[in-house]
Image (tube, rainbow, N blue to C red):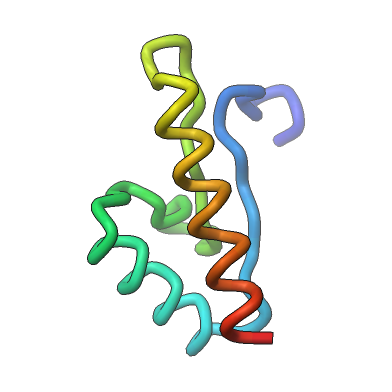
Length: 72
């Protein structure tokens, strides 16, 4: 429901289910945890609450760009 969505959770999808599994596995190896999306919807979800440092957001962004470049 639109009224239940958080502005602090960044939700996204990867091209297909296999690539999404690979993304999550590689992200975990790099130290990024909790990126699995909601259990009933799937996908991926990154939280960006106030306590998350800018550097962590930047590192995730850099990982996502390098993953995209390596897998497109």
